[in-house]
Image (tube, rainbow over all chains, first blue to last red; front, side, top):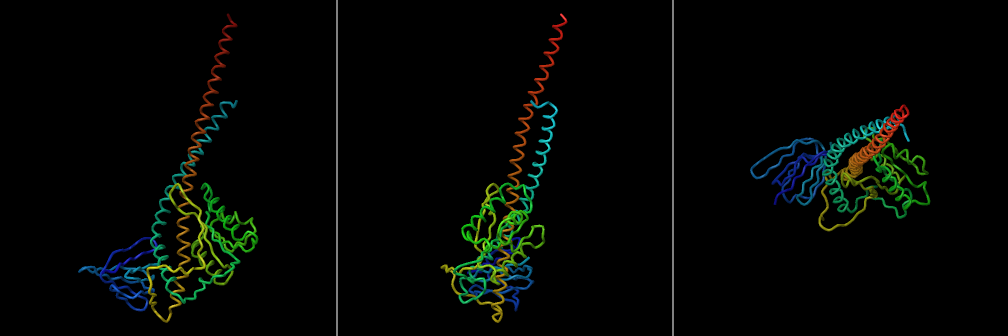
Length: 80
Length: 285
């Protein structure tokens, strides 16, 4: 069961897809997220989000904001 | 009957007006496109934010943010009213004001001093200045960061107890031709249990849990107001476009009518002249 990663800025959806694994730059350390992660809420720093889908790995540069994880939905909201 | 010259002058003046309204319509159309793009671009952000917030609200049972303060008999009610800076946009502002008046007369009919208004846009300030309500905050769109400042002002007002409830009244964009004035309660936040997602949140860092939530709640008001402002902007331009389209069409009709009477008057003058000549010739015979 994949994780649904959604990255949204104030002006558009930057990314939306099902991924197998992702890493977000939390304010207090990078957070790795696999399916079944605990529901979670944190601010995030500017940095990169890494994600893995199948064998493909990719990164997305982001600004600061906050992230919410609930039932394998990862919502990253970027303030700007 | 009007003489030829004055009709001609009138026609050319109406033609000028038509040209202006036509130009304004096109400008509004271009602005509408931009406003629509901004509105649609912000929508996913606002929707996700709202969804997250309702998750938080429904899962953090013991959370005591002042935004949850609910008074049984709300006294001072705050209204955010989003109007426009410029006129010539049809019934846009009137609809908002009418809706606001309905809301106010439903809730504070007897004590107008309990109505606290937060107004965006010059037209709104002008309209409510003459009424017995207290204007807590009035700002023009021309001001920078109007939305963020307004959000700060209302949050402050609610936390400090100056207002017990907060409503936002603005136009909703349904289509280019249809806009609807709508009122929605923003504060206090209400804990509505909905089935589905249960399970609470781990909030990082745990030591500053309240601070994290505070920030998220405070920003929520900004997001909500910003989304409404963008929507209202799109409505304004759509409404202006329609108004100008109507004005252009009316000017066209008026020109047709005036041209007809101009031709009639000219024909009458020609006929008169002919009669004169014929009479003159006849008298010489």
